[in-house]
Length: 133
Image (cartoon, rainbow, N blue to C red; front, side):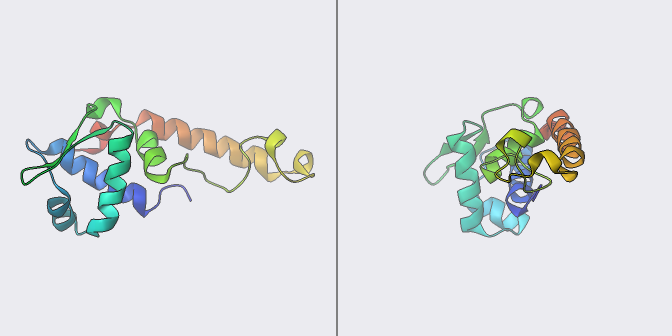
C-alpha cells in the first residue's frame, strides 16, 4: 500500500494551502491541482478533524494550516489520509499478533519489518516544509 492517491492528493493540497497567503477553498484547489473536488473535500475534512487544518465556511471561506509545516511530517500526513499507518506489506505489526499459527517460522516478516521501520523513520524525518520547495 504505502502511499496511495489519498496521500498524494493530501500532500499536493497541503503544499498549496501552506504556500498561500489566503484561504484556499476546495473549488480552487480542485481546479489548480486537477483533482476530483468531492474526493479532495473528504480528504481535507480528515485534516480538519485531526486539527491540522482550519476550515472556514461561507463565500470567502476555505482552509488554512493550523500546524506550521515544520511540525507536520509526511508520516503524519499519510496516517491521517489513510486512517492508518502506511505499510509496505499486509502483515501483522508483530509476530505475536500474527493470526497464522506459523508466525515463528516466517522468514519474510523480519526482513519486511526492518524495511518498514526504515520507511517509517524516513517519512517521520521529512516534513511538509521539506517538500514545499
